Length: 303
Image (cartoon, rainbow, N blue to C red; front, side):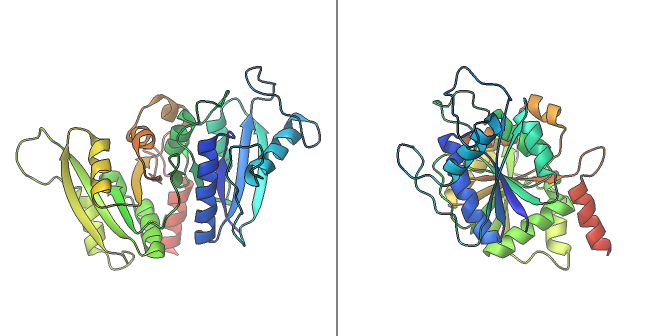
């Protein structure tokens, strides 16, 4: 059975993302792989934890189990009972760049999606969430859910999709259709127009609208198209989502290499740090070559 990959640095926000991921796994009939990457040496800034078989790897594996099944005794994690039918697996590994390790692991065929927190809590030393979540969401082929702290899972009845030409790529459009069909969602495709632009002309990516309106099958959900004016792209989307009481914000990115994603600030990063709603990042093909996920989609269409 496919899995949700949930990276953790043992922070409170990452535990919240883990709980969110468990609900998502139950809803989508998936299992969970909980993973932590470490540098391979003892960090003098953090508390030394020895458990399991006494090795560094064994200690982290034991800590993952305690993270997944907290007793509520002497920890800040709330009690968690994984849903019936959802199996947990624990993985650890050595990596100086957790984002690259997560992207590599997510590319394996047993992973269907990734769920992450946007940042760590301030009290965690040696934390690596934050820029890691943004980099993964830009460079990973799989759908990536970025879950803000304190966000509880709720069904995605209303989704706001950032409307641009990348959104019209066939593969993310198909993924969006699958998600909307599963949750019986209404989808709002929102284009944010510069508030300083003259005139009232609605600037809408017509490629996407033509696909939505003209295709014979696949769009089995109600949708609306909206243009809002705002001086800030992220704020325009967030304000619209708040106005309609949305449950999820969706953006579609062109895939970048790990290093380009690390260096380039983006709408994903801005939304991930400011949104009170989960942000789902879907991926279109790379400018130079299509991702394997896109190729699989096209092969399926031709079969």
